[in-house]
Amino acid sequence: MVKSRTKEFDAESISHHYDVSNDFYQLFLCENMLYTCAYYRDPEGDLVQAQQDKMDLVCRKLRLSPGEEYLDIGCGWGSLAIWAAKHYGVTATGVTLSREQAEWGQAWVKREGLEDRCQIHHMDYRDLPEGQTFSKISAVGIIEHIGIDNYPFYFTWVRNRLRQGGLFFNHGITHNKHWKRTSQWDFVTRHVFPNGELDSITHIMDVMERQNWEILDVENLRLHYARTCHQWYENLEKKAERAKEIVGERLYRIYRVWLVCSAEAFYSGSLGLYQVLLQKHEITRKHLPPGTREDIYKTFLLENE
Ligand SMILES: C[S@@+](CC[C@H](N)C(=O)[O-])C[C@H]1O[C@@H](n2cnc3c(N)ncnc32)[C@H](O)[C@@H]1O
Image (tube, rainbow, N blue to C red; front, side):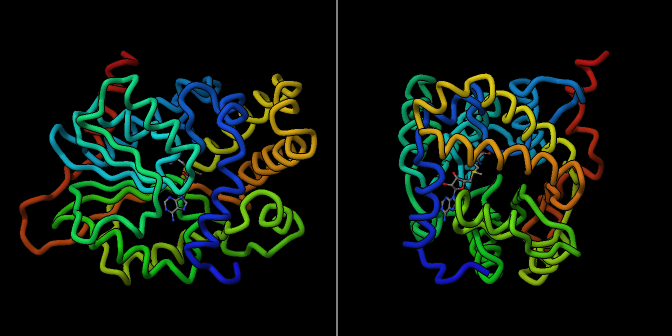
């Protein structure tokens, strides 16, 4: 377990990893600037398309519709919040603990002319103003930073920020039930994610249920993450010289080994990636989501015809 998990410790840990250099991240994440598992409709597909498809998948699972107020917790460089505002007509708010990410996201919002519908804030999600609520909330790749002991607080916090019947989408890395701490994991917490902490999907869902969420849908995208990490690794290798110029040999090597080992861990199944869709349960029948998944894949299916 991570010791002394305070807001200050989390802020330092996030800055340690994410405030390295936006130019460096752009070398391997590509133009979408997404730092989470992509969604490969084509198993041999390329990263940029797969990241766009991932954003669509998230927006469709959340059944985003124009005018809704939507929060993306741990929004990275703002990609998903901007995508949702631009293509789904929502009013989007993104929060990230990384200053460099927030500055990048704010400039991107301006370039897109979306200032009236999308805001990116540099802040801890816990500092969002009391009483501000949303119709839909997503958290893509932040549960890894929350800390297992904090799960009850976190899932209750999200629930309190959602209006009745609202949907919450949680996307995160897990380890399998029989996972044991290894020297590789020590390497990750020492050099990559100081506040990183993983859990099994069954325990995460147990806490979700205890915090009164209704679990609507669960999907395992482990092999998609294996390919994503592998493509990040290949991109980094192609730009190795530039990467070393930006962050130095040591950090370049840390990322290189970490990306290749992560790809392997997802291929082998010691790590997993789950998307879970939850609803703030209500006893009325007003806000029920569709009873099938067909609406999520409709456009994908049409495109393939
Ligand atoms: C792996 S990145 C994922 C970024 C983005 N969602 C994506 O898909 O590319 C994790 C994000 O969580 C954010 N984060 C971690 N702890 C946070 C906190 N307490 N409050 C706000 N953001 C946090 C980080 O700043 C970072 O943007």
